Image (cartoon, rainbow, N blue to C red):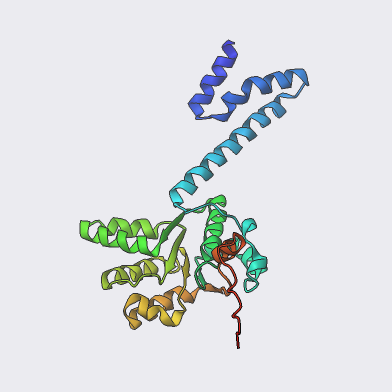
Length: 259
């Protein structure tokens, strides 16, 4: 018992959490099956490392502020034939993050843009990249608040620091002059330093309307598209598909010709 207490104390000293939970059972198994010392130690450490990695994933995912957890395996590529699954799987190797490149998903609402962005964000977290997710609406509000509180410098640092910044739903709300200016600064600060994933329901030709300034939109796109990939998605909304399945959308009755 004294030896076990010493081992548990050592575990607490090193910050090990899993080993104290499994030490007794693994010790009994080692004794019963004549497991070597090295194998016994390896089993303990491997379980500790696995538990540490799970805690790491949980913490990084929480800090990323992803709106949900959906993987690429959960994406229905058969429903969106306009998407090249092989290309998306290639993007999931995260070479675009390694090379500080950007990724833009364009398409109408409900076609899976956010799902794909989140799925790639989860893959990035698994590969130990730092990730942060924010909608364009929340980004504008946070920039305006930070500008008013004179904390804009800290906010800009927070948005330029992550390896991957995901900005969702660009185009659903027009940005005022101040927000558009700071958005340009974010893109400029991250240019060739960190990757962006953007989703938008607007084609690039309409971005002048989003930012209220065609010249500013051109400058933003110039930096965004220099090292980037664009995925255009065409198809029906997943949400409408699910509503149809549930019977919320019924076919219109045929008109009766009484003549």
